[in-house]
Image (cartoon, rainbow, N blue to C red; front, side):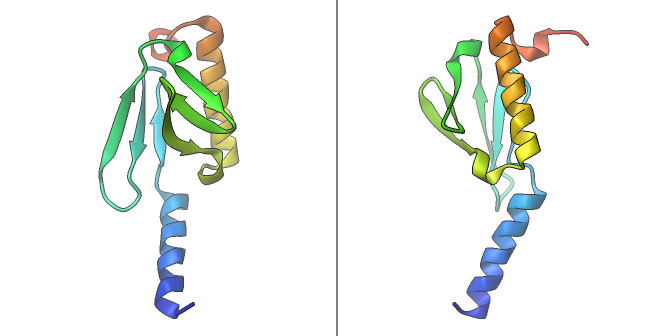
Length: 98
């Protein structure tokens, strides 16, 4: 492996560790691109539309590309807990006042 390719992989790794990969607020999931300031927004109509299968997130049976491998383990556990809470109570998290 050449030095430039090693630096490229190192740079990609740093971006994965320092930039947010996705946000979840109970109504939508926003997935950010790593290299450019682009994002994809997925709206959640019903709590049962969002599924976690083998540590991957699916919305209406479509793989969102969110995988626990690329996310900090404590952040992934928080995400799973929020999804579970949303499904158990059958509501969007944003509709609950704290």
